[in-house]
Length: 385
Image (cartoon, rainbow, N blue to C red):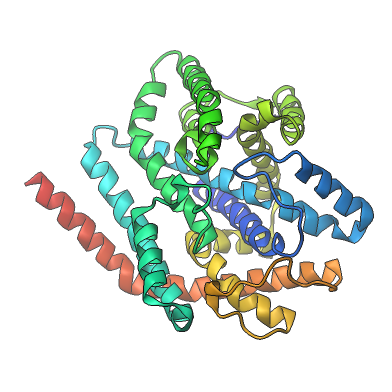
């Protein structure tokens, strides 16, 4: 069978985002319920052993373990669809100035983050001192947490993605112009991919030595971003099982072999795209509607799912409320509770996050979106005068 991803529709894009965010939300919840860990920023070959042994020793842990270990790869789908969507958008107006291109992107990201910060304070103001609040706001807005391994998950763990998104936005026009040639598009895609991996392999030892998370920044995720750009401008490109099966093999081995680890993110992106293809092709009825709905509020879910764990976990665990992120009980949570009950808790948490995100999205659309449009127009008009 062959798969083509060169004509992803708006609905299909929403479903891919829904799949990605469901993976991320469930992962962010469940990986606090066990000690398996994940190979997200660095490779620890022992983690795949823990993953396998957790299922072998407790078969009912299979779903919890799979989501805990693999769920974070939903980020790769977001990176891919970002490159794909930017390409489709940019190709319709490739003569746009860099300033007019980047301003709406920055305003949108920062308005979402500022909104998230306000919500965060409303939930947890009682647990913060002034030093914590200043550090939280400054590091979030300046987006330097993902420059240090010790800082990347501080405050709100999932928010490191927004720094990555801005980095990719900043370099996108240059990548697009390099790859998008009337002839030999494939050749320039391959050249850019090879160059990216050379840089990754050259920098990886140094970044590890100085605790800089290369896979928490744009360089580490350029391959899947480049794949999104390439597929968006290459309608004849198809993926067959001759590509998918070797990709699966490399991904499996990349969980044990350090030299293959940088390829894991591109490989898992291809594998998840195939899974997404089946989901958006064969989903019907209420499942289809639910996925489309989740996809439309996926970025709000991304913003809010991390903080909401501090509310849902104590409720589901039956313990006193955590006093916000300042007092974090040592994981794993839910000790002594059966795996299937914990899995049920994770879906209750997901429903809670979706409900809160829907309400916040309504508020955001009513009060924030009109102002982001005004600010964007003001900045662009002022520059173009």
